[in-house]
Image 1 (cartoon, rainbow, N blue to C red):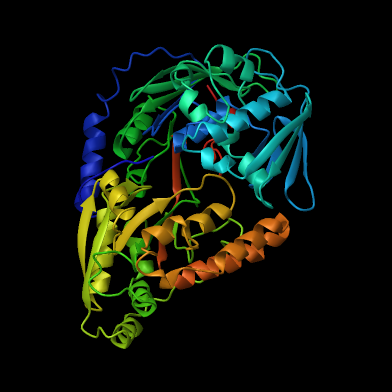
Image 2 (cartoon, rainbow, N blue to C red):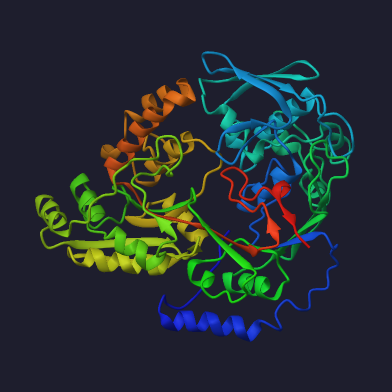
Length: 539
């Protein structure tokens, strides 16, 4: 998911990239000796895998793996509409608190045994109880009933019109409970967090119903999937998918150039310009990922109080259009609130106008006509083609025009997290990618309700003035409304979030997918990143 480069976005960087590509074209990766079938597909990727246990996985690569190996009851189509997979039908009651699923009688696991209601109940209870990284997604579940082998009835703790979208997340994949309990000794009870020791088993085995099964995994090297010979729907069109660990964009691009990879998934805009092979196709697709600034009124080290006027001044003193052009060119877009464009309530928000003169007036009104010093601690990352230090240097220059002196402190991500969750950081930058196609996750994280993630990080205990007391009711209203009516309510939440200027979205980088033109079916998915079952290779 992450890769780092050094240098600047100047002509010298472009030259360096080209030289690196040319110098390594005939040598790098030529020694790969791993056998692969004639009908295999190789993906170059910086794999961010934290686990292969489907109830502990939580990463971009994990979403690809889970959706390919552990099918869920539902998924998303190309238009981000919920569609049935293992489910034959699904319905909700009028209150959006009870959800009924009927399992397709044709559905079978990779060992040929039927997918039954007990497997769904077991899987979702384990997801909730094992307390892995994605477990919070199941917290809304109050109970799961299985009146017969093909029926699952879920009751939620409160109305949740997004529940079907949550279920479409790869983290809700269904595991063969008989295999998992007998072979992996997996647990799903309330004490699973303490008793379950199945994670090691899942590193070498899989037990799902997807089009692929796990073949082999070598950390920091490669992940291999092979065709599920007992797949119950249309058979996958490739025999094998091999993910190769490749950290940086230049190396991924080189593999495409010399034919040792079919797809590269983390190419940045500058590297995308260096391809010389006419057989390589590059797709730039608007993504749902974004990078944002955060201001913390309650941070311990604030030199001055970060009042509403000061936060607005900082926001409008940043030349967003110039920042977009500098960092991404035409390979990204600006967003006006912390909800992605294309998500419910995320479209139509105004981008704050660049207005340094008004910003100076706001600073004077707040009692700081001569400006002040602002500490900016941020993770030293390059995410989605955006180098955080370069971005923060550009923002530093913009804010210097209103006499706000920004002191930049790049730190390792772990150090950043500790400080953000501790004494707080006056100004920072970080990124967010969706866990499912739904807006509640953004309002949860960025809505600034009392006790929420960013309310705590922004220092509500020391300065509660920015807390949004209206957000919990807006959230409840949106989750109670049918999806086709909820968009307006989510938009209202987005407006409230934007007005606070605590969370200040900056850039939404495009996803750049580079691949050999022999590969068909490559697309970016809001739930699954890259649906492997849709891929084929023309030989």
